[in-house]
Length: 259
Image (cartoon, rainbow, N blue to C red; front, side, top):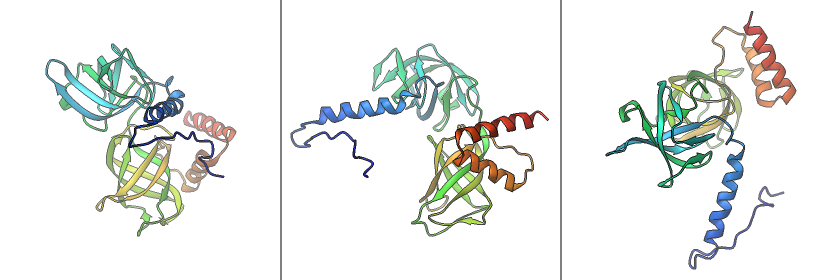
């Protein structure tokens, strides 16, 4: 019953270098399979570095989460709503015509300065996503933790290349103990650029130890006063419901928002 029973086995030796090339090819194959479904989605790239090169200008680097990028593309960088264009694209220090989801890329940008950008900003197709300061999530706390997650507690939330402080508000329970799961609304101290079903981790705000991780169920939850029982019912469907239940839920939400 091992999850690795169908995994490819490559014979290698660190001394003779036998099989190293085959390992690299297999990793490239697996990477292409993982990101293949994301290639046709809009551009999304969390920035991990920003710098300036003499005679070239502003350069950003990161892993392309989805989409394709090429020279001349117009992009938007959130959360500060900066519009600019791509002058040049590199993959592993080589100029390329186009980079695909899953690749590490460097983008030389036109129309933006280094001091306008920072680690954690996200490169997107213009209009694709909007920043949020609230998240409804399903979260699990690691069993080796010594403390529970309670409403009002502040944690460090990590998503993409961004780290921010988030204040927890629990649904239906007073605390989530080590080894347990639950629904949590996080109020963020800085706007975050996310999609539903993105994953994240949380760490202790002072000791910097990983507490747990979770799944974003609603990236832009309603700020209206709604009974917590109704919110929990909605989150139950979003987390564990079947396709028809989720479609019905969104259909009802769209109709309700018009009245």
